[in-house]
Length: 500
Image (cartoon, rainbow, N blue to C red; front, side, top):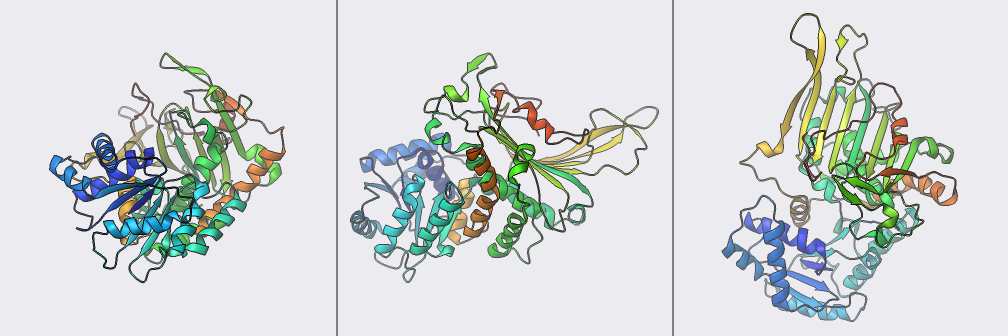
């Protein structure tokens, strides 16, 4: 495995700890090697010690074994390299030949591009020129991180450039959200249970709500984020992929292409939001300075690297429809933002109420029948339904039936990167984004971006840091009955944990 950009935080915090977790479970081959590459000059020994520190600090749900860590560390090495220079790749090939654990025999290669997007096509093209896309002597797979383009045009260009160097089945576009256990459980819960699938349609579902909230701000990434915003950073990729898995038709098999074909159909069925409807179907916001748990936090425009007059959204809420037979007329709602009260991602399926209200309903039961699929944190599933309150009469109270993955104390719950890296090693692309799906998602959000770019009168609403976004977002769910679900009423002191 070759990691381009190995001196960065992603390698230190996620990739190496995930690889160690696989090693710990004996899921890596006996003969393997990990080569880190970056522009920064780092001695081999220093790189190994830094990665060891990352393993100890960021490994999740893994028993750390000192002897095993030392063994794993011996499989790591590092070289300094200018990734933009074609002639450097001959030196890379020589370095890989020297570290090849198979001693000249056929070898399989993974190339992980933990680099700025501007280098994706450059690295891919240079790898191909020295033969690293040729699979005659073992598989060659290219893993790239989002963003997969900045808009539809750049996405099409990027895919074309990547396809000049590698085949589509060699390209793995990684989305760590899809590595979450509960996201994958969407498929199992729907298609292995006869009680859910018959209800999963316009006849029984009132609306679907997807929330992805972050309690942090831009965390020193203001320069990057100001050119991206919430729609590019979260909605176009992570959340629309979750929409695809939530709304898809049953696949013909659990084959990767069969599943991705069905999620692709959902993205193709997203009803385009017309330019004139953006103002009523999309709300964007930007956090402003506020006190959170007694501490004053800066507003977005006061963050380092951010334009003081920036109109980049740190919050977006959207109402849209899926134009197909299963979901025709059912509204889907998405919201995501930074500096919200807590970190939480969940899908909420709101089922239609009974056709006749026979009982007095408790105020807390505005929408009694909800299926809540918590993706993070405290991964789990919760079903809300009404039961009779004790005592005289037929007063209804909402009760919960829930399941938490944390209750499976004897089962290892893999991290997202651990799961996804293992999948690419065994050639399972189910949870990776395909080129056509990426382009379909960009096609859906492009009209919104165009309106924001070309119409200076489009409003961006301020919201105090630590709140659930602009009040105007409440107007999207305007049925007068349910509104947005506000999870996590029992917040931890640091705002980073909440009960399901």
